[in-house]
Length: 292
Image (cartoon, rainbow, N blue to C red):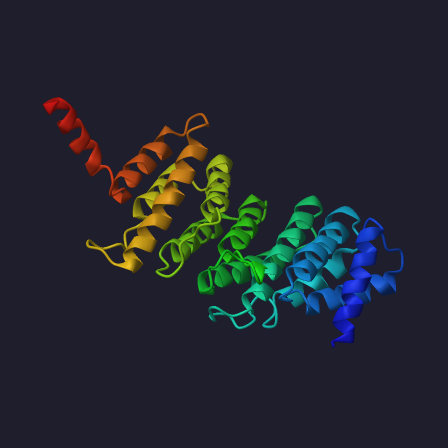
């Protein structure tokens, strides 16, 4: 039995019971180090309900960490044993180390928006790591009973949304973020069935509403979606088409509710027509009705 892990679980249960209050700085430091060590534990109760929840409260609500301590956590999270732990592997438990590292990065970015503690150089390093991760992650499973949530595409999208929301984000970064979605949508193995499309659409919505990148560039990007899908059928093409179609629909219905978005929704509508193989039945049904 791993006594260190069991002690951590027991301590986090106690912290949760006490409304996440902890006055001893030494205990906070020791517990934080262990939470970082076990952030990819395969037990969803320890990983999600205890470690991640404690990070949420300690970082964003209790504000137990000063700027330098937040940077120390970030430096660990971005290393080869966390965000890039066994990057490129598939169907392995290592994916949760990477995806839950992303969730902690999102908390750290939230704090940077509240009180900018990252220099532009530090922010750029962070966003480069996140974009690199999103382009290199190959395990896009959403949820499995044994291990719980993995959700790389969704967790990554949440962090990318925080990046484009930041005042330190420039146009070039926004373009790289949008292009990162191509990697996910063009994958040929995983159907995104846990609302990853909605989380990704939120990022593009943020880009559109901020109106920094410009309408033309966003519309050009939308027009290129699905360009890798060639005619004919295969399981790989089916996955690419369905993932892209669902994303396009999610983004369409997100934007159609806003004013002055017709330029975007027109392009999305046309793109959905290209991806929807069932529209041919509309014509057949109408022709049958005319005969009757």
